[in-house]
Amino acid sequence: DRVTGLFLCRGDVTPAVCRSCVAFAVNETLARCPNEREVTLYYDECMLRYSNGNILSTLNTNGGIILYNTQNVTSNQTGFRNLVLSTINQAATVASSSPRRFATG
Image (cartoon, rainbow, N blue to C red; front, top):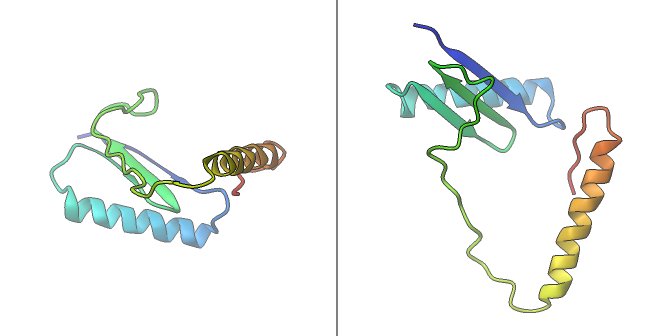
């Protein structure tokens, strides 16, 4: 059997943190999904994906779980929206000029 896999770590984590996250993801996959032929796991520091098919040119849109924020912004919604937009714009500007193309805000 053939397996294709990939992992991606955040641009601001060290190689040791990346290795640890990927190793944890592999172990979690083996423990939680031992019979699955295709798995994608997301963690704060890394993402792991593998499949018995070609995943390098295939977008995975199945099986997603979306977690929503259950808290509402009840006051100063305009200020909150402006803060989110300025933070995203600032992170995009910093990331675009960074060698790793990564930024946080």
